Length: 278
Image (cartoon, rainbow, N blue to C red; front, side, top):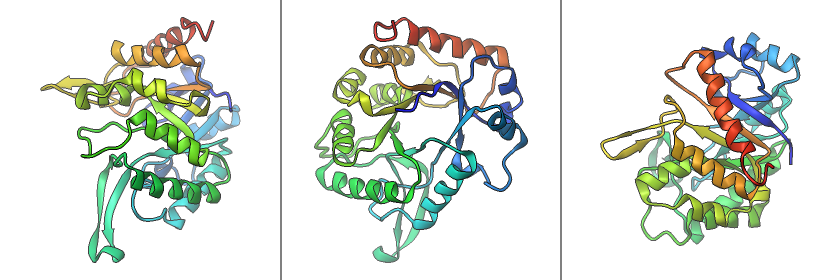
């Protein structure tokens, strides 16, 4: 598995600050925000310094009933080549429905929607993953998402569903510990049970992000500091195996560079205090 180290999400709002943050081994970029022929200067500087850049897609909709669109896969592959990335990531989600085969207009959700954890859904998703992997020049890793509701009649827990995907397809996993915490608060799902079921050797890297509780609902905002419960889930994961990479996501309400550096240091302390890391 590719060793990535400590990373942070590249965003244009903090692009110049990244040059001043110590100990950044790699960055992740939202694939749809990058034009291969016009890579931003700050991102180009990171590439020239040898910093690894991983494209992270949000619009493939690999969990949908339709097969992955060839043009979307080609766009992901183009960004992989432009960035010299060792892998590419997406979400276990669907983002659109309808279209020609349904007789209904195509609707874009504008959001990552959860996939039913059923045998039928697993069959569709596994085939979509195989199609995507055949079209991409590097390994694919898929992320567990946060959600507010669960589909009725689920046949798998989240951990079982992810483990079965890996068994069937060999896909790698991007485990978002903030999403596991979100699903614990909002859907009553146990992060420890999910982690126990995971094939940790398939983990490509881990996301860590902040959120906030409002009116009894946990909002995965990526705009607040990382909380202790999320760090606790990260510690549980690291007690099983230290992941090849860990990345801090921040998408709004960006703090000064010193605060970002302090948050990264806190995450590093979680990584180094676990028995596996020792």
